[in-house]
Length: 299
Image (cartoon, rainbow, N blue to C red; front, side, top):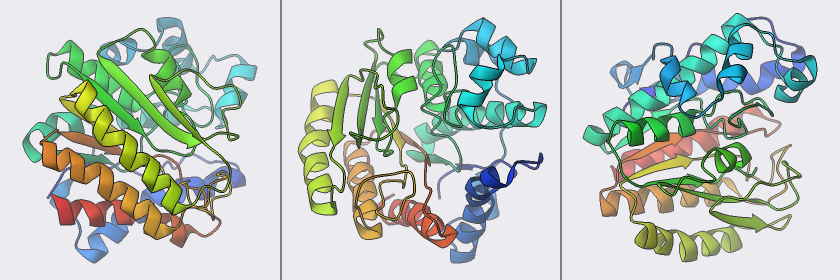
């Protein structure tokens, strides 16, 4: 099977509006075990990330403010979670889970992070439930340790990966590709290396056709030796925070497309789960589980 970074559910008291989004991190591993997609041995619980790896992409002052819980209240409100020591520790473990998963993917070809996809974390600030950018931290770790020479980040969350785009704006060793809702958050977009903004109510056939036309050619042109995939399931028509009209089957076919090309070209790939905010938790779990079901059929 493939390694899966798992983080215990965040247990620090949260306001009612924040509890539901966190529930999937507890239920998804249970579903994978129930279906036999994964065994207990496939999961690993990462340690806290080394701060040197964090500081390779995030500013020292910002990181210190997170660690000391001394962010300006205005900046903390943009993150959306009440800050706590436990929350910051969890964020550091998520980042390290992506790093460790990357290292394992060189052997297994594929790794997952049950959480992660914190692509709204900039070098010097956080927003929208993102404080430390796990895939950016891991990408820079691979480059700094000469484990990769060219990295492609495929961000298919419904929201643009604005923080990731900012972090790698001047780094030609990392190519950032974001396909997202045009009118959705963030309302002020950053410049990724390739942005494909989609109109509201984009359906499966249009979404998949665009991705099929773009992704193989992009990989052929950039020739990455490692791929990061942000597999947000907030492209679903049911999603409360998304404005696209994709179905569960369309979301699954999207995952198939990304994973099949990585497998075919023998490029190691790390997957972070990203967003998913449908009203019913069973829809979120089904969509995320589909990504793992696809992976077991391909790898």
